[in-house]
Image (cartoon, rainbow, N blue to C red):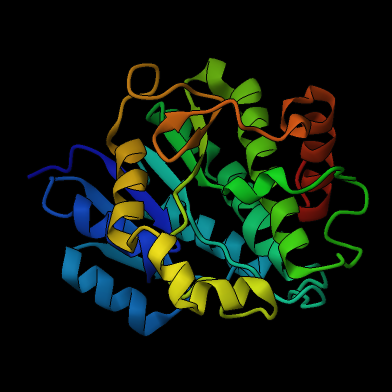
Length: 280
């Protein structure tokens, strides 16, 4: 049977990415899962009958290699949906292989680079780009694209908020640039999900995710995966609207005012392109 659609999910070795993959298994779609852990990613692929690739977003070189591998695998067919779901929160002074703030690179620059490198494959199928953001995008009161990722934040949560704000700005910038060519984009808060998120940092975020109080207020990874799968299986323009930010499956007005600034979105796009070696 020829697969009806090709869906790529990053951050698929655990959490809502793995949950979404399990929900999508058996639909007749071609699933390509991307994760950092070879063992975990291979196991989710085995459970779902999916293909899988390995990449660590702390390395932009690995992101470029991943894009090349994906382009080779889907040659002649294209990509119907790309889920930019990989992400995390790290210590405020943790640096990537490329010498950048680790949270900024893993959560923003890596998916920015991957999406841009895969635009020909997405355009071939009038594809969709779904980016997992967070309600934490409302935390920042300012964002300077010229220094983002290069200067330390006061806290890990502040760094995470900046990267999640960048996700929303990137989604709107992507919509402005390529929606006319058939590519749709949305960013969403998946809910506060009971996963191992926050384990790589210290302070209140780690405490909250590990506490009984925190667990009682969270949704399960399966529920978060359902929210991601809803976008991946939906129809842009019917199920959801391109260029928008959603709280789980609902469009919301609870958006950081900075995310509504087209000049900031453009500056961020240009600075991000420069940081990863792309033409703006």
